Image 1 (cartoon, rainbow, N blue to C red):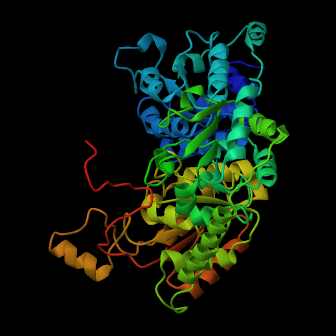
Image 2 (cartoon, rainbow, N blue to C red; image 1 turned 90 degrees about the vertical axis):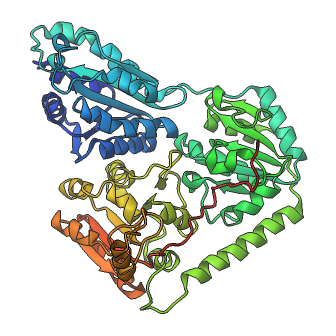
Image 3 (cartoon, helix red, strand yellow; image 1 turned 60 degrees about the vertical axis):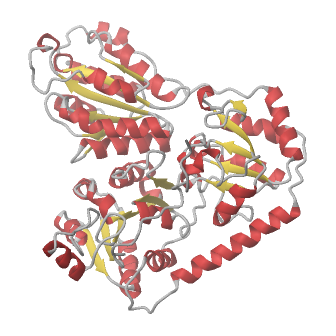
Length: 564
């Protein structure tokens, strides 16, 4: 029988289908977390609210239901804002619940007092404080509905301490206040006239291209998209988190010929992908100056963004692509275009293979040789990749094939560093023992959330964390270069201490760790780590630091002349 506000709120979360909460407890939310655990909701206690919010956001992406994060007020909310922003940018459903001061203490300088609703509002679709405990079911239901419906995103609910601690004597009244679980998000098909327009454009195209984004993965449209590609025989390019919607091994996948595909395409169908920085805004010189975009998206305000002549197709991706599959039309891609792309794929794939086989077995590792050694050991199926870190994430994308949807998680639209451990924990909680989470992260990126190793060990999660350690952000220095730079006061701002023993941090937390310096050591460590079914493992991979190499990334665009 419910006897307190904490128990009542816990029941409301259970009513919304919540089975796991990520967060950190403290005054006044301890009672709420304990009440949740009492009724069977799992609580994963983190060491920093930022990582907890990242874990909740990725759980929302993977499950298709709002992930839930619980924090204390004030600083706890501020730390969790990064997770709200990340969910907003990536369009993932997340609900943050945070404790706050008693309602009669507002504006008195109460413990950890902050106007948390207003602090969260810029990053949320909905943010509110219930006016009373009786009003709480309505607000919680609305938060879950807003996070899930339309374009998914974040929502915030403020829970005052006196609501949590409120004694409940009239249980019949409480029962009457309950609201049902938010139903799955309503889905809509596209305007048939737009389907006609799309089919005609694709039929006339000589150099068509399909770009598959993570929106297609979130909407679980993999069957429909695969059928569309098989029907039309149009080459496709997945975005980083769109990998696996169709297997990277599919003969029409042109990931290895990305630049050529972008430059030559005349009609591009965007399926759950946005023309943002990841796709160079649809601009020349990366794209042809006469390319025509078709965009399928659930959010009308996204359609035509950065390209106002885009053909807008509003609707649920799964239903819209099914409409296209039912439409009778033929595509006739130019054979020279197709063969050119396939030749480029083979050429670049060979280059990748060669770069990964350079050097002897005892030579210092590079990104390429390390990734090749890791790929050779990992099983082809049953692995969910987490990728984080600038060079690590950028280069790894070309080495690790993904064959199933929602099996590659990375820094995403916000290029958010620090998500790695939160994502890995959230993903392992979602997938359970059916998948092995392998997180391949840069040393700098890992540093944002290293103490979540303790969270993983305490939670008995068999994570495999592979740290690509080059002693710095982007590039680092070796011991001699570092010592000289310190003496001469010329230490680069990107430098970290050389050869930090991240593997020993894992062991200190109760996990297992390996330090490796060459192919043989890396292969042996990988084999040993994969045998561990109940231990969090860290493989600390030392690679060539890179020194004072000039930074360069494929997505960066610099014109030689000022535009204005």
